[in-house]
Length: 130
Image (cartoon, rainbow, N blue to C red):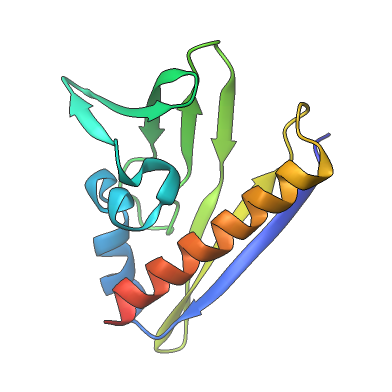
């Protein structure tokens, strides 16, 4: 099993509005730094540039459960699974991302990824609340 950190933000935006905006793959490029500069559509696939080349990003289809999970398929065949969920919390929304420490990551790399995800979720929060 991989070590995991669950990173959560409370968003002052109704669940229906938050999820309606957040589930669209093109919206990920507005807040997810790892995808922001390069996420684009090629036919039926979503592609993002990584330091090791083009990666395919597979997004969960729209659903009634707030699931925004996605997979990043790296050029070397590695499949990075990123569970991401939204749930209603009264008049707002909780968003949580499960960050798995990949086998090749040292402590410093995992801390950098954690910090990046925290910033990404802060950006998502600002966009949805703005």
